[in-house]
Image (cartoon, rainbow, N blue to C red):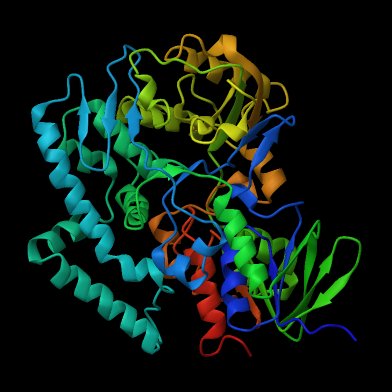
Length: 516
């Protein structure tokens, strides 16, 4: 007799695992299908040969919220927040700027900026806290609202008016939809400080500091700080989520690539795997990119023509490449004490520098001076490399999905150019490089099935956020296909290692009108 399956989840990335764990803890029979040989998706560990290991594409993260940790008993399964790290804005002359949880310091930093930073940070953390109900629940509809929709809007309004106070509420309404460039120029003088903050607002998105809506994307980043300080990402999270889901009864199957979502009379009833195997379930939940889910797995013939056209218009082309370096020793950075090597290092000396790098990507070019986010994970976990050796993980922005002249002839050249750029800050780096891996947005698409290699499965622009994410007609984790839901980064509130899309989707399925 075939075992009953209540829910099939497509993809065992961290959001898929969170969703699987919540549903399994609620007593549902859950099967999670993953095309790769291990769980984690973009947050899964990677290796160069058998000796050098990396924490995944997402190399830094804030802790998961205490609520998710408690609900899924993640601490019991070995999950602990990592050691807090600072952000260091590198200067080619060694005049680096350090941004910590309590303040900012650095040679040549204006006293005005030093004192203004604390007030600025406190104000924007308050903004992020005020919109917390919006991030942590399904986005409310603005038409035909049900009780949860009205409750979420009331809580948001209360937080904005009573939590912030009248003056701060007006300031929030003034800045929420504008660009980070203008906000930072109003607040600070130091280019290094403005460049570091602006990087947090645009990293992972096809946006420059002058792009409208980048204050909103920065608030999404600040939201994570409410769960704890930034730390180095490790395999702990994926392992704990996997164990939590399996302990609750969920089953994970690897090497299981879903080719098609089976639909009959407008209702999803199963999936077809590569090779032709068919699996049936009452509910199908996709952790995949919404564009891939609705276009490739469902298919336009199953969708209304206007809706299918809107799916095709979802914006989101990846602009970040990933460089992994295997090193024979510890790199040295000019002017940077060894005690800070384990921090998050940025090459983003000004907002003008970031905007210039972004402008090149608009024309399918790579800037000769890209924005770099650098970590050395082996300083936090010496098991990642052989004794006295190290690994370096670098996010490179802005790197276009479509490169003028094609990637085949230029991928290695661009990788070596980035290594050369790093050498301007770390003179001994080139001599330490044993091996490297350079993943372009095209590589990320091919390996992780993220359409156009976009981290967040779609831009976090204003018209693709909240009740409009991923698009009108497929918000609140629903789709036009009965019994088919979404739970990945393409859903509200977006990408990052928050687990919120997975949790919110599980709540949607378990709530009224969900599990039919």
